[in-house]
Length: 146
Image 1 (tube, rainbow, N blue to C red):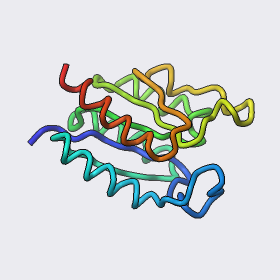
Image 2: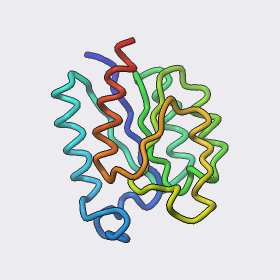
Image 3: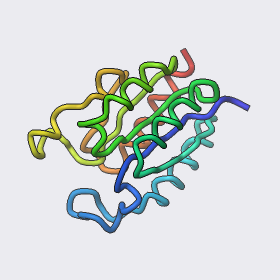
Image 4: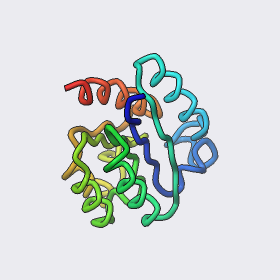
């Protein structure tokens, strides 16, 4: 069994589909998880799809991925712009990291234009809605095959 791709989701993404649907759409996080699971199976990948509103929990999952994961896809949500702790944890991970944002953060408030996570990520996907997760999985397939 190949090591899983960790798909980590930060604060408020549990409200996907309900919170600001004009920005984030109507799909729920469970819909995204199901879409990712189906695509992962098609690509021959396994995933571990997780969400937390707590920074420390995200750091713990990144640490867990160090020994157990092939790669990390992360939508750190608001922690994108604030969390040196998540950046430090990602820097301790040896595999590929991809950053995903549902909205185009560069068309939003100026404080959203800076990402600590981007300093570590091999790539950033923003503004493609929840399709960004599937795009990231396809790219991750290529990255873990190298």
